[in-house]
Amino acid sequence: MAACADDSAVGRSHWAAFLKYAAKMGLDAMEKYLSTQMPFWRFALHTLVISLACGAPLLVLYVLINPGLASHLVSGGPALARFLRQVVTNGLPVVFVTNYVSFFIYAVLTDRYGVGKVPVRLILSDLPLRVALFLVLHALTYVLSAQWYGSFGGSKSVALGVVAPTLVRSALFANLSGVYFYAVVLSALPLYLPALERGTAWCPAQRRWRGWRFLATLAIAASFAALLAGVTALIIALGSG
Image 1 (cartoon, rainbow, N blue to C red):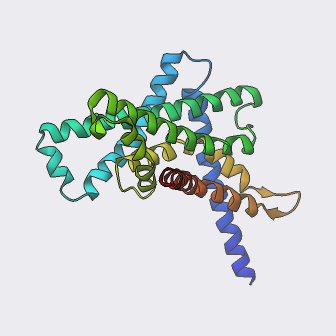
Image 2 (image 1 turned 30 degrees about the vertical axis):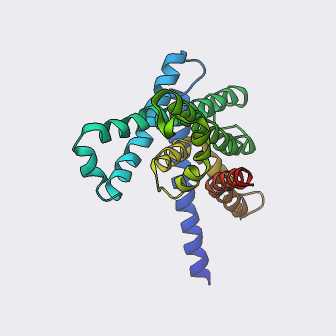
Image 3 (image 1 turned 30 degrees about the horizontal axis):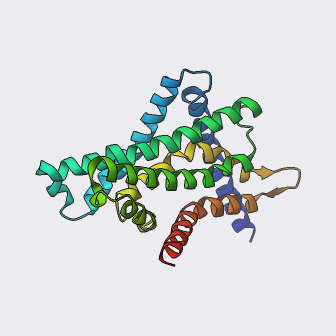
């Protein structure tokens, strides 16, 4: 029993050390590259770089795991042009704007509370904000695609009608929207790691590990995908009613 307890304590210690290091890197990066003190264009450029860095590997993965897609795109022509247009005009704006709004709000909160001192509850409020932005921006880009490029038969109503099922499948990484969805999730890690580290810390005063905060943080993070699927499913139900 004592050996198991010692192993458990060592495991918690290693986990806490890793989280502390990762959280510090996240905080340092946010402070250095995403500050309200820098010009708009630089803040936007850094946000764009983060969006591309998180989205590009996922896009490559999506192409590789879909049989025949890579060879179809390599052949060039209209197929490649449509694919790139979807990424540039639909996906990138959604990821970029979602990240920009989220990062800017976090930077403002950091100015108010101090680096690493933003309340966890405010950090976690970023989750529903990202969900809402992801939904609204997807609908907007689909409508604009119908209007500008004749997508969805040029019908705005058809474009809006496919938003919900498309986003439901995105949680399963079953379409390009899945690339955008998980790019948004990955981009948020620098914000959430400090909250996770603080939520899993050992509490000397109470001589216990605040594991309940760890579980709560994980549950809230997991609900990001579930909430997206639930909201879009509700939209489907209302639309078919």
